[in-house]
Length: 104
Image (cartoon, rainbow, N blue to C red):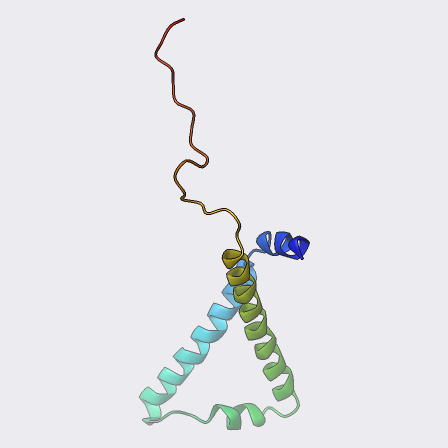
């Protein structure tokens, strides 16, 4: 079990995946904002996606995979943080050696 936590501690949030999620989320918000500014109400996102036909399912699966990936990374980070054996800020641990001023 400790081997799993060692692998989790090396897990990093991929900048490309994070950027992909950020762009996807921002694009959804901005498109909704523009539509509301023009037409005065929110659009039906499901209806718009359904009009794409079978590509609709590919888009839904891609978005779900991105959110599941992010949730998984965050859960693993929380587990790793909560099972860390040694606190980082405890007094007396990992102190730098002091210079000696006495001559011998």
